[in-house]
Amino acid sequence: MQQRFGLIAGAGRFPLIFAEEAKAQGLFLVAIALKGIASDEINRLASQVHWIEIGEFQKMIDLLKTETVTEVIMAGKIPKTYLFSNISFDERLRNTLKKIENNNDDSILLALVSELNREGITVRDSTLYLKNLLIGSGVITDGDLNENELRDARFGFNIAKQIAGLDIGQTVIVKDRAVLAVEAIEGTDEAIFRGGALGNGGVVVAKVSKPNQDKRFDMPVIGINTINVMAKAGAKTLVVDAGKTIFLDKQKVISHAQASGIKIVAL
Image 1 (cartoon, rainbow, N blue to C red):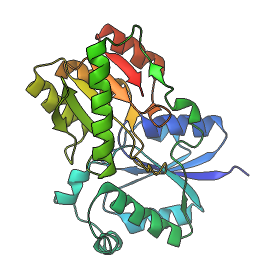
Image 2 (spheres, rainbow, N blue to C red):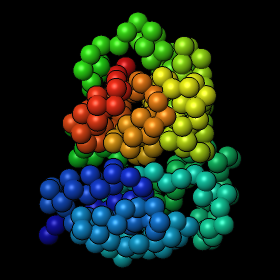
Image 3 (spheres, rainbow, N blue to C red):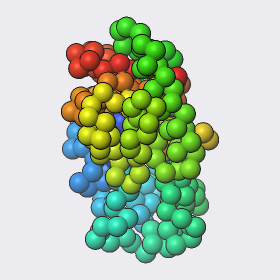
């Protein structure tokens, strides 16, 4: 009998790449896909797909239990702005959120993980089966960083680590050792656009893991979209966390970055 495994799928390529690997591993993958957020491509990659609204937490639990799934991973971004939207949350989700002291990402996600655990569903490391996607160290693209680029990269990296430690965001945009933008609830892309505009291009984007990163959720991810956004914003350097950043579509991203005049370095 095939091992059954669950995937709670948010936005982006990460859930799709996990689903591809799960298929290659011979797993029976049950995907719980969030309507309006997850990609329709999940339908062809997962063994079974259930589409739910973002606020249907109890329905998600019931579906996983009906499918006899006891292990899941959470993959893909879920915009935090949904907290302040008109989308209705079910009673289970409302009661879960009432228990936490603040609405920081870790507080919310740990509360959801705890509820799943109570139901006999274990949330596993999001890099499960995908360790090969964790980025190495050093300059990933061709050529070295010049002295000014390296100073900005280190400055941005250190500031981003401090911001991430406060659970505000995981990305900062800097130029000439000045902070131009800090990611908060608006998300990485909007922070990059804002920083690029304020710096008139030529900015450095630093995206890092939290100092005590829980690998079950919210791992930093970079991919083609990251480079597309940086190119539009006029950013010149991307600095990330070596060994703690998920690097999707590596060769395509490196080629696209180099063609766009963007350097990628992992510290």
